Structures are given as C-alpha cells and as structure tokens.
Length: 157
Image 1 (cartoon, rainbow, N blue to C red):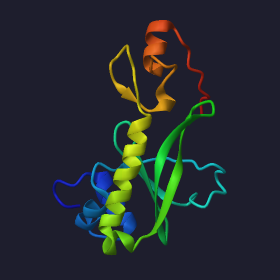
Image 2 (image 1 turned 60 degrees about the vertical axis):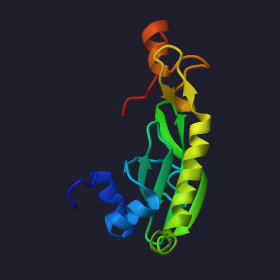
Image 3 (image 1 turned 135 degrees about the vertical axis):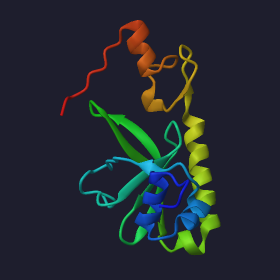
Image 4 (image 1 turned 180 degrees about the vertical axis):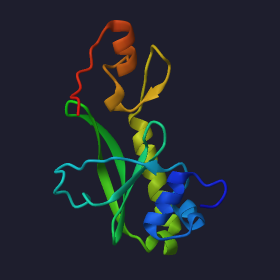
C-alpha cells in the first residue's frame, strides 16, 4: 500500500484490480469495507461482491465482483438489528474505472447527493443522520435512548 493511502481505499483498488491512483480518480477516497445484505440475501445478484462504503453518514456503496462494479445508495434497515442494504444501484464494467473515470465520478457524486438529501438533523445532539438512524422526526436513535428512555431491541448473535 502506498504511503498515505487509507486501507479501505487500497482494498477497493485491489478488488478492482487497478492502481490506487486510478481508483481515486474515478471513485474518490474515504472508502472502507462494509458488510452489506441485499434484498433477497443470499440469492441476490451481488451476494458474492466485496462491498465498500464512503461518507459519514454512509453516502455511497461500491460492490465489486469478478466482472462488474455496482454503485448504490446505502439503506439502513432494522430486522430487528441494523442491516445495511442498498437501492438505486447502477452497474458498470470494472474497465469503466480505467476507461471512463469521469462517468464513474459523476455517478458517485449523484448518488452521494441523493443520499444527503435524505439525511435528517437530530435536534438534540445537532448531528446529521441517515433516515434509518432516526427514532422519529426530531431525535436520532442514540438521543431517543439516552434522553427519552427508548429501548432499542436487537437480536444477539
């Protein structure tokens, strides 16, 4: 790994089979591995993909399999524990990262904008959260638990 590269960025480049600079040009930085479950897990088209996420809160997912790259908007679901899934996916050839980096970069930006439009502001802790992290219109899950006694039920593994 080149000095200065984040491990997730280098992992993304490795999964794509490209130089980290090539991946950075097309996809930007700040990627980290993610555990993602599709709509019909494990039978989903992308069930064997390596997944990465960027942004805080999560803004863009990248899934990579042997032939393709998928970019998608992350969605947090509760089943009853939090599960990271995706929607609005767009599929590309892995070669597009090398030969059409501007197209990939534009798609990453568009998906990030879509994600940010859905973010909500917690009136208690004054931070931005994805919709799946909100207890209600005003409070994030953490603040609802800490200040209003809301109990989050999760299944232990």
